Image 1 (cartoon, rainbow, N blue to C red):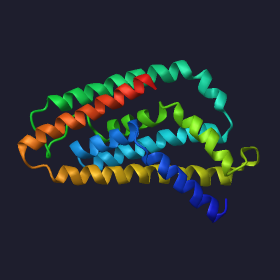
Image 2: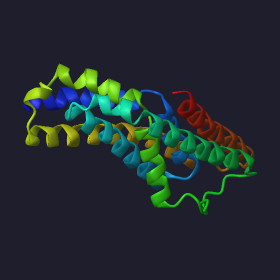
Image 3: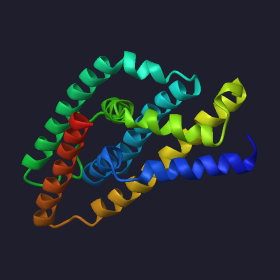
Length: 202
């Protein structure tokens, strides 16, 4: 790929990544309630999930999504239920604990939740299958170009989530009053519940 193509793909992927949806809501919620690092880890997981679909698109395996559809739905429903549970737990907190983290929110679990959000959205593969051919002829795609494409889109989607994460982290730093802390718990918990609902109905 030439430099112009890489930049064009990067910009388009960034816009796609920062568009409001379950992924951005989840990153905003986690970075606001738990801090910058968990938000970044969640962002990395979401970008990994996106790249999985991108790999299918590169290999022209769009039909695989139909074959795996029942499995994808089951995983999405389980993940949605768990994410909604986390949201309800957050809503029930009386105050925002800025020092201690919920024991279920380890780095690995946060990464897996991010991957789950990114990899169980079937709309992503539709986007890539319609978007990538605008820039690259998939039938003439070689290994080197494929690696370039995966790295470019991964970094672009991750950077989009990173920007959302920064916004949530700045909001978190402003929270000192217990009243605002309680409101923040309700807001961030509600966002996580919405993410779960979106995963159920998508």
